[in-house]
Length: 297
Image 1 (cartoon, one colour):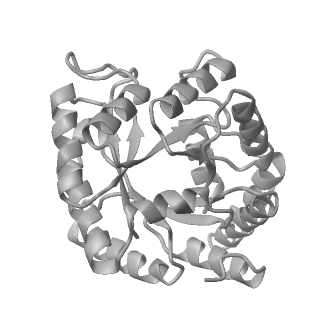
Image 2: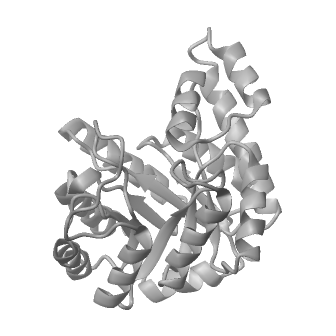
């Protein structure tokens, strides 16, 4: 998919479908990632994002597998880029590296503190906020399609939801083309977030991010990391299945499907799936959505 086509898709009334990978750390994990990419290619994702470790710890692997996904499977790839641990000049070099590799889309993030650190500390000659990174990408790589993150339940470091939206709007005003949300399990928070964003003057597409929770333990872990709420009904279902190791995953898939169906029926611009380098839940979801008449390509 060309950059112009991606930008056109972002403005299209038909729903987008995208997925997120993380760079593998072993040969076995690499083989699994490529197998998953091949399996999900059948469903024609509009793009695949690939994460970037704190301080660029996975920089070379991010680029390597971004290229493999593009060259071997024809994916439009959106590599992540964060401010953590990089000077402004280093970031410019990375953006150029992505551009020269034919990667014309970037997910611009401030980034989380490196493992073991509690607070984000910008590089002495670096950037402090994602909106600054968006601005830099737009300057170095003007034709780039830029995605940014949004937090329906407010970023953990934001003093208020209003302040969080203010910073999100700065990212959009500096050149972001679309927003992908942090994962959530309660659609109410997404629709409320979109309404508040529109009232704040944010007009770009806001793509909801979903993940299949394979167990109550996993769901609680991700809720803690992202400040995400866990609906009581969903928690009760997962708790009831917790003694049966094979029962939780179908519950997670069913919950994700119910979310996805409502989101699409109520006009969400698409779905972004945090797949954790696993094909099963995404395939199950897409089969259900196909049966319901969505994503018929």
